[in-house]
Length: 640
Image (cartoon, rainbow, N blue to C red; front, side, top):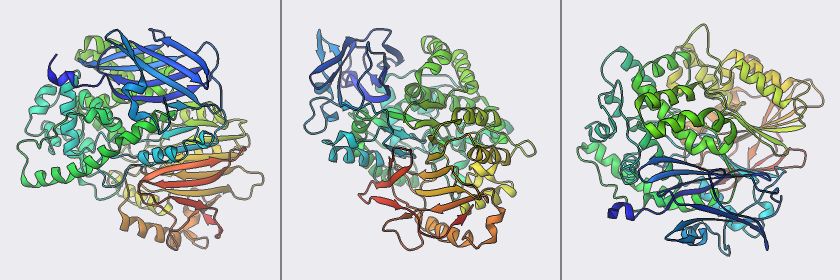
């Protein structure tokens, strides 16, 4: 074995606690060898489970010569205890001995811990939630802030959140810094991640992609000339021309399966960075070289906080759902976008690779049963044979799959929505934004809500957003330019808007709705009631964004103040909103300037719930230490 591979740690990424229930335990990790694994669970002095993991408990998928995804999925002989700290030791066998997590993963432990621990809480008493984690954004990491909070309360496990919810843009496949892309290539080479051939591109395969003169900061040039290629280029790489609301670095869009898998490892594990050189690529012009060095400093800061991000995911059950940047900017924005993006083989492959990586690194841990049932066969067929035809068959299966949404069985229940792949396409104008969920998906949602007392909905995009910003998006849509401002919101499509608002009005739907969202790169809280109706329901829109991303500060401050003036209670503009029958009251961020209701700094949301499911405390924990509590509104009612 070469020195390069001897330096690889056995456990490269993880462990990440995923779906955890009394009768089930799911843990995700990536190893560089196919070593045997064993799991031991203990509560105080009692051993709850101790076994070497066989094929029934462990799904192993080889992603490269030195890369195995390991999904631990255990059904214990007896249910695990609730509301008690459970220690776990995930060990591997090497040279005829078992290596404990305390030895190979000592950095995962909090002070005083012998092994990491978790709790199974049947009651959703508190939750961490956040979205939009861009490594090269020049701000702190909200995941690290969550870890600091856990460490500060390590002796009070009863105060720990029941789970960590990541509601979109866990990776930015379309917006990648030069040093991050170099790291992807170095790590891919070290792991020997599987290569692939491309169709419809200026490069024939993964090797040619990396050797291409357009590999860094010029990837939009890899599509060949022609009408179909130009429409695909506009769909995947148009972010470089948008003035606001979107990324400006689409020149480095991830393309290959190997790049996608490497990006996840680098986003979640400091060990993936060990030994990487990150040398500046040859052939960069002066402008690109300057940008590379500027990005390098920011990425180094991200890397320094990764041990904390890794540790928090090793202690809290972690659930995820995609938004657009996990795949590509404006993913499935409109029917016209779909026609152009899926109509070219190269752009189709890029989207498909991102969805394969999402399945492996995010989706499988959320709700393994339907994904294993419907997707395991084509996935294993491709990983075994690795032919282009098998890869395309897997991608086609993923495009048709309708089981990305899921339910977390807590009290209240948490329903996580897929707002990306089951869209309500506009019929009159294919360029108009699609509804975030189609009629069938919304009908299924309503059936899940019937007769529940309370529910937490996770919608990556806020259902109740900032009205002025939504109006700006609507104006651009009128002029046929929805891509210019990412015109994606629940109210943009009349059908989807009317159905989702009617769900809230239905007499058999929950008395308490809490909507957790991200996406927008700022944070806010709205209290919502239905006008002229007694007895509820009460609705709370709680948005936390981003973990490591922010809205342009000056622009947001202007929008915030102008929104409060244009849509004040006395404004006639309220009558032109779809939510005119809703009373919307923004909560005041404590310590904010007069008139400001939006919080614009990196961090993570913390919500505490009363026994009836009502949020009694809402915080935005700032990555820079500035924690903001949202106070109950004492101002006049605000329409729409």
